[in-house]
Image (cartoon, rainbow over all chains, first blue to last red; front, side, top):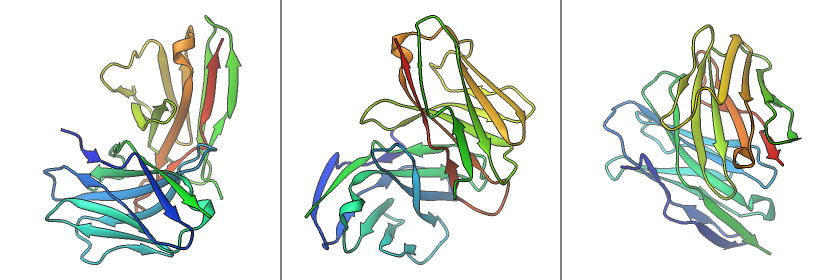
Length: 116
Length: 116
């Protein structure tokens, strides 16, 4: 089974609107971390937001928030007030366990296009 | 600023030659680094986990004799693509985690390899 599933290959959003990028995960570990990365056309991976499995509140970082629903094993990324510079690939990732040396599992990504 | 660097950012080589890619953690010691490969419009595929002072752990299907990984110091890991062929053309990205504390995995800017 896939560890991380992103079901939206491509998404479009109007500038200044909010958009939700879906991510579901599969793990039997109690301790894990969920991440979202942005990858613009330049290829660099830009860290956006992190949610720990024990965090009770949804993580927020500026215009990014993570809608964490543990029972449903979902970790959707919400981008508010979209900007043209938000157009990029977005990857959801998971690391199992607490060891920062553990590998990441990545989803297949969602290509977001912001329309002026 | 960037905490993980990669060199070169772009390389073109002839079929049959070898290419070395360096990954450096700039302001922290990384006992573990990861090497990924990414094809156009696809997700990151973990190739191997590079551990300082020991042999790398390769993912299933990755030829360890073709993709040589050396993690000789706590700030440097190298990936050597030996006897490169056109099918090895890809985007190679490394990442590293701080030994403790932060959850984020820091990515290098990537190396685009083209084998002619």
